[in-house]
Image (cartoon, rainbow, N blue to C red; front, side, top):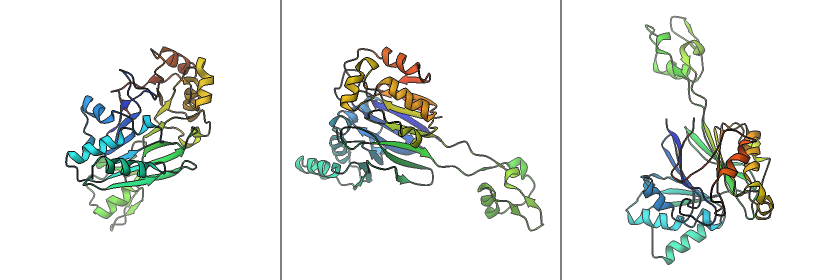
Amino acid sequence: MSFTVTVLGSGAAIPTLHRNPSAQYVNCNERHILIDCGEGTQMQFRRFGLRFQRISHILISHLHGDHFFGLVGLLSTMHLMGRDKGVSIYGPKGLEDIVRKQLEIGGAKPQFEINFIDTNPNSVEVIFSDKLMEIVSFPLKHRIPTTGFLIREKIKERNIDKSAIQGIEIGIQAIHKLKRGEDVVLESGKLLRSVDCTIPPKNPRAYAYCSDTAYMSEVAEVIKNVNVLYHEATFCDKDAERAQVTFHSTAKQAALIAKNTNAGRLYLGHISARYSNVEGHLTESREIFLNTDVAEDGMVIEIT
């Protein structure tokens, strides 16, 4: 099943002609998730041919404007377009008051349910879970309470190997047991071992989003072995002092997290508008973690 990330905004606080503020659209097994919602996010959906009405979960990392100023406009447009399906919004304490007051002052009374769930900036927590995937929030180190997000598939059942059971009459309950890894004894007394009759599922995939944060080595253990890591790299190493003062990361620091995480691939984002190109970010990161790219608006990342 599909697991993709579309980058809607890869820039830092000041938008540029080529980089919108932070926003990403994730499709994980037909679970449609928006991560952060900077100014102009709904226009990015239009620009890249995506349907924002499919979103059922919105994750807001923190209450700096370049990560949530687009949220009220998006919700208002959803309302104007007749949305009747509810949406869950996960974010810092205080987000609900901000959004509901803005909607009220703006005269928008959505006809769909908006369910707010406060995230905890001090601990690792599962904030959503169903039979196919789960979303985990984890602490980051920024000027205000901030969380990152880990979206990962759950381990799927084993698949029946039809050639191994050909000609054998097996009931539905026995099939389910075999898929769960349990052995089955038929009425005839024949033993069917799950390992002989099934094929292991593919390894579950995982994607980690590290929003605004100073270098924080502890993150690596939380997101160990993710297939893809998106990590902010607002600055190059020559501006490391500025990164430290503003609680942001450099490309080198993001690469260290990816290396210690044993990530499959690293995408750098939240690029400061001060840089006219990203060659410095790539060079510095690849010296430590070779499988690095810089996120670009409109880029579609396949989680494999």
